[in-house]
Length: 150
Image (cartoon, rainbow, N blue to C red; front, side, top):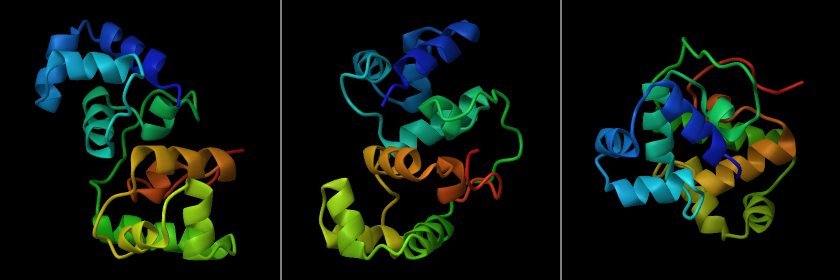
């Protein structure tokens, strides 16, 4: 994932310090620095918070789109995200086991995502979106369009 440059640019464009952004996320500045420098993967809950704070899509942060402004997003709904992931998997003729294999995890993790018990992990979301050209914001239920990138 190459979101580190985008996170830094978004932060600098708002004249925010790493400490400011860390406070928004309720984490230590060092942890945020590790996100911004891609030393550790940013958890999905923090990615959503930053997306909302900077008013950009997760697709923008992931580098999937150049559209900066993201106005009409919905709050994350675990059930909607679960339903969309399941619909995506079935429309691509993937079993839970095949999707788990693609993501280097196990079938029970996918089942828990599809039951709405957990939101999909950031690296898994990124991998699916990149490989299948599908919007992260769509999969998470934050928007209804675009579903797929051109």
